Image (cartoon, rainbow, N blue to C red; front, side, top):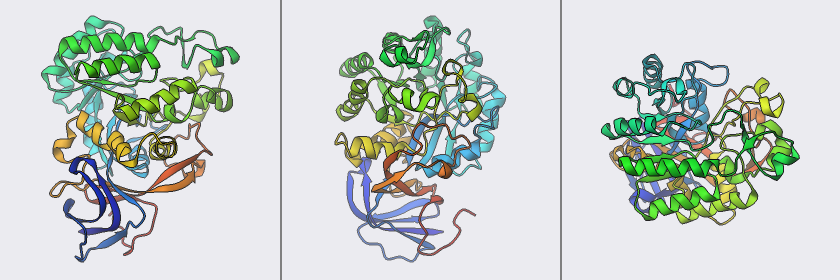
Length: 438
């Protein structure tokens, strides 16, 4: 099977390419990237006016499978990711039972092989993600756990965390940590401040909870000498801590959810529980600081923070609503509208944040992920950079529709997603109309 991409602007930061080139794909691999390719192909994509990018890579998207497949499953999550331009997804740990049991990891590894995109299983760090005792990390790793993360829950017992860091470092792997409040009495999804007072929220999340916990996590990771992924960084004080750690050459990557780049806490007044997310939306000043931190390189990665929630779990009183929003299908559009359109980043830098850097974090770049490299697997996203579009509910592929962005105008729309040489999503008809997904 041959596919030919013609007339597109190839932006490949890893190979220092930013010019009009053709891309030939054969038997799942990138065969050639050059200025003019005239070989016959089974189908041709005319990418005129579009950007040809390495496939996007997401971290911690929740597919809720096994355990909560009314919200999402491996197939629906994969299709949602493909529509958003993602060819690789490291899964979150929002499963029941939690992926601290080998049968959960076995299930994900087994069915990952038949999904349209590349998905990787994450192991919980603590048993049942309860923070009381360690999961059997060595055993779960032997069953195929690719990443280690306790989800959107901070680990309070730092002695336990040190033990986990030492085990994970011995595997030459990354530890991903959420930094925040542990007190279950706190109302998650809203920060203490003017909006919390306006909405009469009791026990909102303290303003500095993230930074205080993040500081400890940085110190422990430095002590243990392990690569740390901070999922996520959203406060001004946290940004200062991360910048200082980077200046001291600590091996740390910082993530920000795309939603926190486009909305501030005022969305809680207009969108209600749909805007109740963790990490919570903050002030407009802090939203702008996050955009500037991406520009400065303090934040490395933009993630979807994809958390599907059923409508009945949102259509309740604020304090009882489940936190989370879907995000895989809007990451690119948010980046275009709020980063490129507002002058913080160019598309090359956006591609670094949603493809190159997350691939580098997990050492996927050694297999060519995050680049369009001859001889490597063809994982490519083609998008219209200037196209403005509305995020409409009827077009959502995810099983869940919980998003405060429904009806919002975004910029930058995915037209084709190619994973391992197969066309797994298309919004535009091919020049030779063949069903490429058989």
